[in-house]
Image (cartoon, rainbow, N blue to C red; front, side):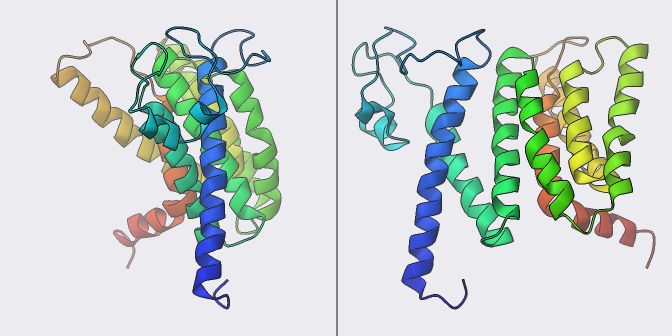
Length: 260
């Protein structure tokens, strides 16, 4: 793309961004419907959760509709969560980032699909304290593609990655009931298969830092009491996302502290 005129590059990335907004809008549907049994397969059009009024096409335009309506339903004036435009904007940001980082090739859409699934997992787990098995299964296809298209990671590393963190988490959860949820274990297992054991360890280390820091903050602020469940899925998703892009650099930096 470096040989294309500037206006052509801007146009391409604008199209990618618009595509990402649309994918983000779809992810909002997944987040809203998937936790409700049978709702995701429903053919009903999107409705206002307050008054149940069916939304018109103009009310479904990513981001712009939320801005035009000033964050409120035009039928009942109920406040519309800013989560909707945020997820749509993240969809665009992730799309542009993936294609900028990897270029126009097979890796960009593969990683993008993973990031959007992880985004859905993050919000659903935060809202319901559960990770749907269907989202774990959805990661199988990009995981298989990553195994084929990531030549720097050996087959043995992928296989070890499947167990490197998931197995210790399972053992800990058997010893300490409730320490980790089954969804967390399955999530890091499939992500470990995708990333290989080294990047999986990096992802888990990042997740421990984020999850531990969040837990301390919630307890200090009084929002959670000792012994109350704190979801770990969002921290795992963030750790995997960071490890995809910067995991190897973090590993190299860490090792440089001990080996010159």
